[in-house]
Image (cartoon, rainbow, N blue to C red):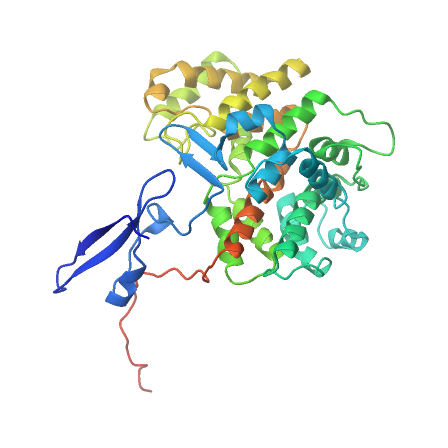
Length: 427
């Protein structure tokens, strides 16, 4: 039921339109404009900057205060006390698991990490230098051809099975994409390793020698997975929901989300950070300052990537945790990399320089995750792939939530600005 009503008066209409106003558990109230269609009116909101397309109980963001909650739990608490598999359970089912539930869920995920052997043939159709995101998008969409035994979207258990399959197989397919790129044999997953360890093993081990997993790397990878797991109604999540509203199978929906994530304005941000560091090039103080000045110049197209955030008008809460992880990884490596020197100096300037502090252009999660992934030896073209592995749980949780409730096929309206009706010219 509506808490109260809003009144809309439009010039030219001889009546007042009443619209229900609803309040959520947190965040701004919303005006229900669905009744406007019957009055011959639509709202106009490019980019959906002030439009709530759904109701959801999964994730809440307060950008002004720098708050990110998953099912009510702050992200910094989850990142420090939990792990990615437990977070997957929380996002999918709504509550933290007890010991028995966690063990069962972890076992189900581990037992679904392998992919059908014929999926190997998919990779042979791609060029060796194909971008891993193009491979990931195609192979994930193709999973529907292999795992169609539990795809009745109206049956909850079928949705859960599909969700577990996607959570489990995404790291395997991601690692296969990397191996295909570099011309190395695929690695089968190992059920004795945890989620992050298994991904690193499939990425970097070879038949030539034993691969020892660095626990600092494994912890960092688990944190990266956790901090990118879900972020409310972003472009890729909205794409998954829109595709899912048609009744499309879950693999097609997630493939659509991967395609949306691939955009540099969305999932490619941490890759853009490394490209920016390449552009800066020289780690001398004079050169770094020159680029800082360019960033401050409103007439200069150069931008500092990885600073500020569209949603957060304060410090990105994920960045605080990622900064700690970044420091741990760099301390473990003890490496002297000019690119990493530039990054650390940019971070220091952004946290101290009045220009950046006043505008709240703090380093965001993409800034630190890009540095960590580079330091761990992961190539730049795999950054967005790892983002997709992480975000799969968010996508599939929103898809499951939508299908668990009443929903309608997505059908945005438009403000038509083309020609009026006109006749085809006589010949």
